[in-house]
Amino acid sequence: MDNCNGFIFDYSKCVGCHACLVACYNENQTVPPVSWRVINHFNKEKLPLLGFIHQSLACNHCIEAPCLKSCPSGAYSKDAITGAIIHDADKCIGCKYCTWACPFDAPKYNEAIGVIEKCNFCNSRLKEGKEPACTTNCPTGALSFGFVDMDKPKGFGISQKPISPRINTFGDEVLHSIPTLDMDAAGTEGYDVTQFLKKTTPSPINTKVEWPLALFSFFGSILVGWFWAGLIGNSIEFPLWLFILLGSISALISVLHLGKPLRAYLSIINVRTSWLSREILSMGIFAVTAFVGLITGSFSLIIIGSIAGLLFLVCIEMVYSVVRKKYSTYIHSANTILTAATFFTFFANYYDLLLLLLVIKSALFIARTAIIEVKQVPLYTLVAFLRLFFGFVLPIGIIAFNPNINYINQLLIAFILIAELIDRALYYNEIEPERPIHFERELVVKKE
Ligand code: SF4
Ligand code: SF4
Ligand code: SF4
Figure 1 (tube, protein in one colour):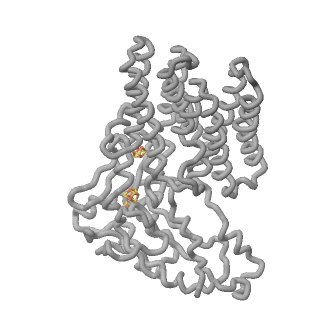
Figure 2 (spheres, protein in one colour):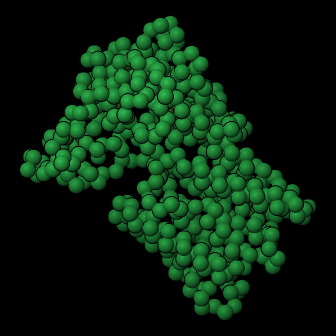
Figure 3 (cartoon, protein in one colour):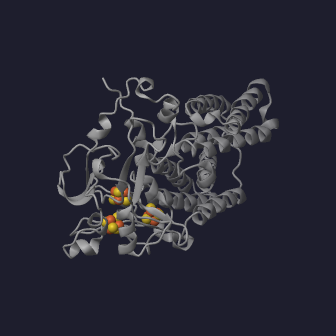
């Protein structure tokens, strides 16, 4: 592993004074509320004996930088001399995907201008032989700049992903000596340690924020599933006007949710490493081949369109591979390929298969949501109940007990649509980007 220069952080010396953060503002002429360096505070509840510790963190200029690999527009680059990961705001489309991929929460979205900004390693200072402003201004020596040993085990609060961040931490032995075997006996009476261990941190990804993505991926699944059904004789006909309408709405939603919609064309630049770029490219190929195939009736175009549609859905799933899942099943009920398969079975009139898929999806939905603490929220429970009612109870009743299903097709598809949309929307409450604060629970260490 390449050793290199980077940040050295000593937990035992950081007093949380924010001098590094202010130095960064001054050096880079940035202004609150966007701060390239942040100070994370652990144990805000101030549970006795856990310690109240701080962590000063900015971009760690990872050698295998996931932000650089994920960015669809190629807005990130690596400085060949200093190794700094530099962000070019002029190439940023404001999709925020890099904020999902970075486990240090380093890329900051600037709402005012609709693009990301982040620590640049004080690259010009480094090239002049100086140290970064933040390390120079740390009064206690907790944050410094120097040789980073890449073989040193990653300390507390540092992602274990194999991305080689340029940071070494020290002083975390202070944390590992916390006596926790018997918290009550250790003076924590009156403090809810169980709640501390269970507590969740608000995720920047949730249904309210990501509804455009939920709709986009949902419409994409319907279109692909329906298009696949076109390969089968006697399937329910795919009206061209509906394809155009749904396709246009999907495209519009995907573009309008960007911070810089007019730069959307840049999103296919990084096909080499970005799943988001690949998703957008395969969506384009699917849309064009499917559209022309539907007009001309060309079977080869319909085959190409079907394959491109599958690739599009695979790419959607891969886009979400960078985030943490709160559920533990390998596949989840709102998986776009599974959803497309459900619509395929409906439109192809394969009701036995549809029944099977509805059962599998409902079981996966229960498995996904049962472990979510948010289920204790009454509204969430009601919505989850509706998902199962419309996606399991009603369709299964209709398919099982109606000999002539064709008469009630419209009712059946309406129920499935409602259930699938709820499922997809709730999915966004059950994923989150990795964040340093997720390590907080490690503060409570079982002492053998
Ligand atoms: S290295 Fe420079 S840009 Fe990065 S956090 Fe420190 S002061 Fe800010
Ligand atoms: S810390 Fe985050 S933003 Fe910085 S290089 Fe690593 S992944 Fe990218
Ligand atoms: S284009 Fe998207 S992924 Fe790339 S820097 Fe901008 S917000 Fe981040």
